Length: 366
Image 1 (tube, one colour):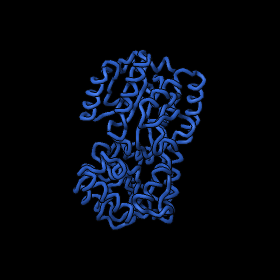
Image 2: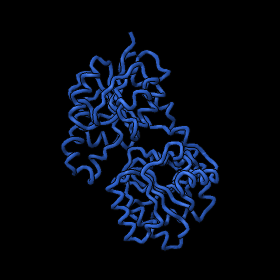
Image 3: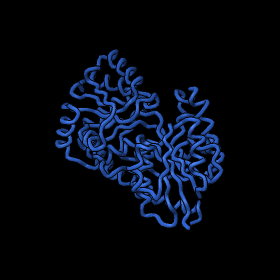
Image 4: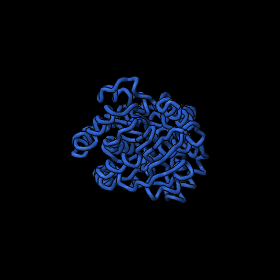
């Protein structure tokens, strides 16, 4: 009888969901074990073709009800894979946890909140203590897990995320036409994609953009793709104070089929973040052939390698100087574009799934 792997797949509409979905797609050619998914009812039809079986656990993430239901529905599993730190405390079998980052411990804006103190930090420490093994997505995150959660290095495996094939080199003029039709963006722009949380450092991006306009780069707009109504209001208020409101476009979400064109139509992609465990948008922008200007921080140095122009994430002057340096040199832009395309090929979901499959087999002794 084959061993039984259970994966908590209730995350399909987040960055973690992207990881889970691509992992399940890559496990279709497995052997020696069956895959069972815990799923939300709304995702059942999407997941059913990818798994041997699914169980509906239609409960919110981060709550006491999932802490009661997940251990029960995963009972009898040879291995449970939890793709985030919300591990089931009452589960008595072997489990593997993916810890993508330690933002709840490292970012003051998160670490001092009640949710972090009462929920995230205790569960992270429990996961570190009780998980049979930990997967993380960068050597940076591994080092932080070793340091802050006191986990032995040999208990952690680094497996990079991948980039979806939809993110590919596209014709810029065609991309601009598609973006104008879909989103009414008919001007040259710099781009940011990601959430709007404080550690993303968007206040610095806005100050840097204001400085660039004051230095004569008035022909460009700034497009910020990311949801979060409360933070967006604060950032829009900052735009008003800086006098750049009409030049900054906030977009909550972009459909998956349009997002590659949004990347490809941008003159530059700018990532100002102070803290990242991986940095999906950096790799996606590179895969689309867009030059990347990136903060010199956390995992971004590791993930971007030599394919980005870096700046000090505490200095809007340095951000502005980095943008100017790239824009004024066509040769430098082309070098970044070419290196970005090469760098993006390192991150493949097929390799991610193969590495997970190898780890599953080792842990279940298949």
